[in-house]
Image 1 (cartoon, rainbow, N blue to C red):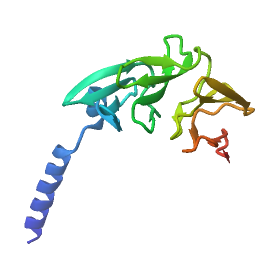
Image 2 (image 1 turned 90 degrees about the horizontal axis):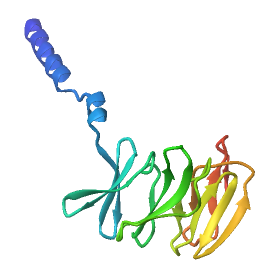
Image 3 (image 1 turned 180 degrees about the horizontal axis):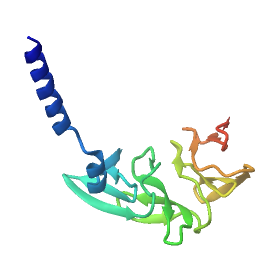
Image 4 (image 1 turned 120 degrees about the vertical axis):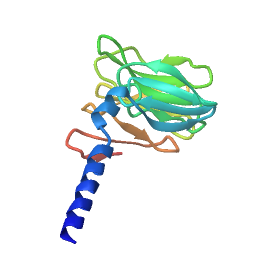
Length: 174
């Protein structure tokens, strides 16, 4: 009985060792992540967050290529816009919006040393940071608020009246 147990244990261990996923190989080959539903399909990024794709009718199309563009990307309530941070070859950053229907990318500001990720309210108000400033856009009007520090992530409330963010110590502010 002991021999049978050890033989079965050995076979199980051998099978388990050969059936494991090689995560380094998977990462090197690449994979899709962060799916978000949009008006005309699904927006995704790759595991390196260097591209934003549109998956529509089984076809995958690259919409944006930029360092980190797919990380922390957000979709507007009407599912027509994707907000993201564009990073150029000189590592300068600009908040950007991708229209998934037309494929057009609009930079909300010029490239700079630091900007934050774009977030949307339900009424179309947009929020992001430029250096130490919080920028709130309502249509063509932009309001700027000095936060006293840089933060990468801001989340605007659904009604567009409040923005949540944190400092480097993790303290939350509204």
